[in-house]
Amino acid sequence: MVFPAFIDTNVLFGAYLCDTMLCLAEAGTYRPLWSAGAMDELERNLLERGLPSEAITHRLAEMTSAFPDAQVTGYEALIERMACDPKDKHVLAAAVRANAEVLVTFNDKHFPELATAPYDIAMVTPDDFLLDQLDLYPGITVGALRAQVRGYKSPPMSVEELLGYLARAQVPNFAAEVQRHLPPPVAVRQGRSLAKMRD
Image 1: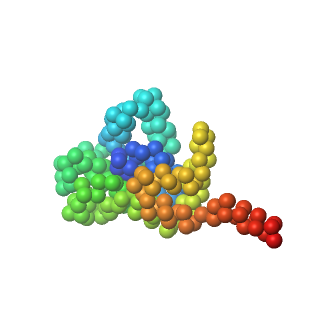
Image 2 (image 1 turned 30 degrees about the vertical axis):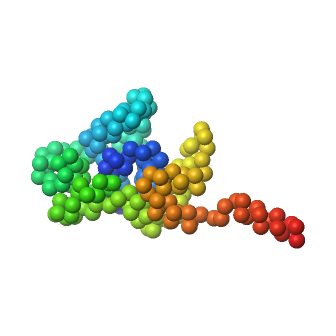
Image 3 (image 1 turned 180 degrees about the vertical axis):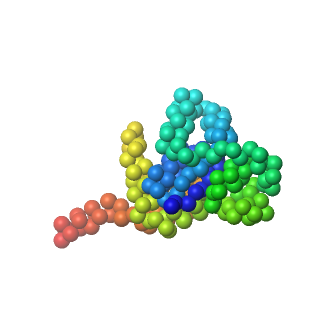
């Protein structure tokens, strides 16, 4: 059984990183978890960013449809017990309620070990989480990225271009490591072929 990972709102905010996280979940490498509070926060943040409300509603509906068992409920009574940053108590409470093994977040300083250790929850950054996925499932991870770019039609995108976006989305180590798993660029192979033809 794949392990459960609670995903903080800040990881789901950026479109490309969110897609990567969810494509890996669709590939079966882990089970994604989030809460109603996290979804409400995501909606507010996307509205503040200026995205059309229709697009936001569609995005959240697609996430819910793809992962109907991801949303954690019944964690409210645990919120005040959490020893993390007050603004993120609801996040840790939901992760505890769901028996998540890891909490994926950019706000690592908001979740000190003192707060997470009693519940055997490891706090990991998205970069470290994705590196672990690549280490455990290299073929599946690269395949998930290829599936992700196949979904981008207007405009189309290559895996290499996606990695550039992911590097700027604060997962640079993952992007660099994936690049090592890819075949040499087409231009290089063409150059070698042309050289052979000239010989």
